[in-house]
Length: 407
Image (tube, rainbow, N blue to C red; front, side, top):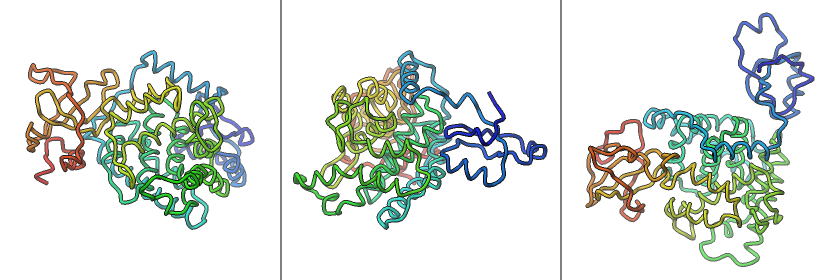
């Protein structure tokens, strides 16, 4: 429901709605910039600018706690809530790639700012993240693909934006409101800022860390929180997530050994995204694990590191074979997972690209949930593209029928 309120009644979390341009002619002191009111400082700025009223969406503002809202979302997913239709992958992948690149560039800036002792900019980060959120809403598989296929020289930068992207995708899957997706995404971009206070020789060490070195690493969530506390207008949800992303369900995490009951929704979602991307990324001291194996490992961490229901839904969100995975089919051909199928996770959409001898063939898209010319294909196993020196990235562009070997 839309309601006109005095600016004196505005509170963080309320959403100012988009109105037609001619409304301002009749209410010249009406605040009309749409979006969520993030904090008290924004409200004070609105008052200083002379605005008297605003129209808000009262359906967005809820008295439920974050935990209560998450419980409702989880129950809806467990009861097989209907999924919103997705836009075709090839129609939105180019837009998603541009959004991902913009957010990556902003991630590099805020990490550089933290290294230089400057304040990090929340509002610029939130703006840079808008395209990622929109892509997750239109077709989340585009963002999942890009998080696995986009390579960057620095693990620090790529990991931060990947955690942001995956957290946003999971939040959107759960049905979280846009303002929460913004918090999740910005928290992902900023979650490892505290590592800028730790010597590079420790961060990039190839061998096993000493006890003292690991104790330094365990302090980075605290360091990150201190960086954010010095910056302006950082939402509490972002600070909580940054501080808690290494806490665990059973209290065995760090830096404070908090159990699930003492951590925020944002912190737990960030933890899932952080672990998944860390497992599936090449790092200075270990090679990446295949996505399906990483999810299996995370499922084995239920009731220890993660809440069982939350990690189960995380796996359902990404799919047993996440978008961007290279798979071998029962026909002997190889393909890449193009789009996941949450309702039938073993039967995603596949783009077949190689024959049984790993020779490139004209790419074609098949839906494993639908027999291909009367033949039921199935996934035999996941394959490691790096083992075969295959670059999958060129396959994910707006033209489905083109082979990257001809580009």
